[in-house]
Length: 370
Image 1 (cartoon, rainbow, N blue to C red):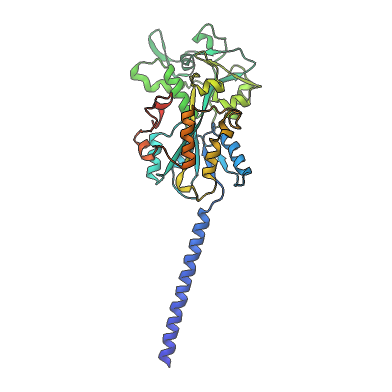
Image 2: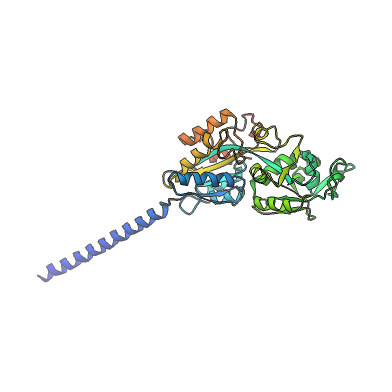
């Protein structure tokens, strides 16, 4: 009898321990599921893409999904956050005003972010803008480089930048002080501006080509942070200042600001879409494919962003400054978003500076996955 009671007690104790263990497993599983089952898309990245992304997010919210959040960290900052890992604590989408760099793709690989879909959804133009009360400016990229570069060539010698007014660079330009408001190094717009303007306009000798993108540090180039709206406000306060930002900010402030022509071309939806405007560039969003189907609405957000309703004639993103791509690229991106087909893009290839459109002959092709 005592042996039976002892056996029963031991068995009961084991059963209790099993029940407790099972309960703990169920609770931990529920917590894990709850932690990943986020119902709101988390977007980070480009301040240039931000106006378009937030309008698109509102549209997605109106369609029944929870309205996504968008933190304008800048393209570089967004890539760091996006590539930091997979899971609820990491962003689902990052906006970019330039293509992912090979070093950023390597960061993604290091952190297990291997399943990424690139969506090149529209074109934009970087505008070199100032107050609409100022005199009109017709500039070349060389003029802009001479105004902003740390070193310039004078009488065949490389010297520290001596120019204090625009008419010292070219005597047919107005006698306005040189003062330019710029984005920080983390900005994709700054990357694109440096590649498309500073490098193209540079006249330093070949052995100094890395210095082409160095800005002067005598107070005439003022870094403003990831806030294009603030740049637009500051330009309105002093009509001799210039600043650069995406076309949407110029369009949104068209009653206060205007752009200088660059190489004889003014930015417009048409000149940007055709790449006649020399400071045109594509815009991107990157989707974390492992989050699709877990966080609701990611694919739908991307589909809406490339829809005719968004970027077609009179589309809701076209109206605020997005310029459509050529028809074959529109077909390509709709295949990407409808079928989640990466169309040859992969993190591994980008880390090796390879991209499916790198040799396709588009104006931007050579700048992909640098």
